[in-house]
Image 1 (cartoon, rainbow, N blue to C red):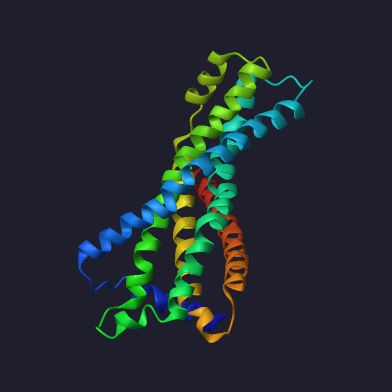
Image 2 (tube, rainbow, N blue to C red):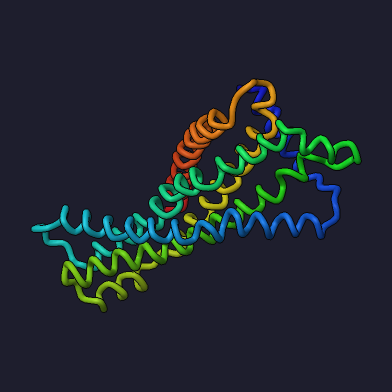
Length: 251
């Protein structure tokens, strides 16, 4: 493990030393933005809508018969979506949809000798193959989280107002009045950290790790998803503990 951690940071140092024309880099970056981000908007929005709908259903059903004001239920739904469901649960969808495919793509080109042709002319193949993908993932996931939060709130609004009979003014009043800016900042900070960890570790696994083993592309996808799932869970625990520790010191 220490060996691979050292190789991972060495890989990152090489990845951020880009020695190709900026026009080529931005062309790669825009292409990765479209591949990673634009094609995932519909799926992420649909899943976020269902998550918001089901969250409202479960919370209202669980609290049925208990005297709790409606605005507190809305606050609970909103905080649950912002703190966990939007940045964490949907990150696993993003991971399975895009990041494992990115690792397989890098692995396939590395195995076929595609990047060796560029190394002959002095191109930093680590940076050429991975940097644009790392930046695209790091920036796309926070943007996708915005759509996820929006459609999650739409799903919860439809259940709360049109099915459970809650007042629309109460829903929007609780949503705006009790909007915690600290939760929003923490939500987007988590997405940036998750996006960078997902993309950089997947790029490392695709470029460096599997070259030592004779494996097929199916194993690459399965192993990459397993490793990144463990890393994301540990990162989520660490970030939440850090937030709790910060709040204890603050108050």
